[in-house]
Length: 356
Image 1: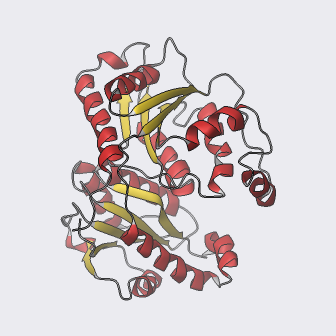
Image 2: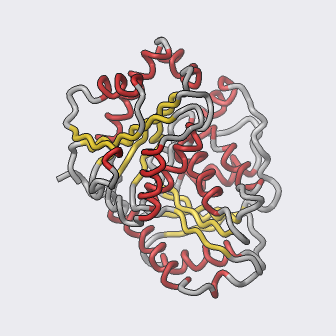
């Protein structure tokens, strides 16, 4: 992997151009504009996607970029990326960003924790971060863009020869297709990665009630949470001692299940002191009919964009199986499980290729 940054631009916005000029000052980079049509060679590169969208969250070049990534499952093999998105309006920037980042990951790209800098038309979404920096919204935008570029250039994934993976689920032990696939993956990891299974199904994982940041930080400093319970006693220690999570996500109404979402919300206490930074995230999503990509985007948004988990290439296995005990009999499922398990082993025990 080369340390020269490849900046892939799509869409035009004067503000985005000004921010890029500041963020890339003194940085060796090559620029490619998607107005050229085809994808450049993104493999083994550090890639900054810099895109601008209109009030509707749409730009023809951004749509072309998304289409080409989805059509090319190995287009970003061995690459790592971050995304800077500048919107003319207040809506759709996050939606577009999640779709693009998921497509990049499924094309073989590593995503560092918090790989997104999003700017809405008013920049009001940067309000809290601007206050923390003591800057205006516009000046904070520049400063955060500089930070994003530097983090991308410095991003590395260590080798973990004694890796530990925690499989989390809230599934019925007897009928779950998702759990059957997850357990098979753990069997395939045997002897290479230490695995542990933890169920969130017993009803003791209560959702976050939204404490103030000050209260959350107070309990976080003591390694806990105001609401305590099984989350603090069992789940926090298991997460902290693991190198990676494998989160099993059956598609419930095109969304994560309530128990999995409660688990994610309660992780906020661990993010206060950056205790999740560098941990890897894998997932298996099983849909009865369709919509697995929506669940994968939701998981990416919650745990990578917000909670700072690192996403290895092809981090999510997406399958469709409705009736109980059918996922393990899908055509080609054995090969897909082998590839997915192999990707977990490679990410944990080999890390990310470093710069030449």
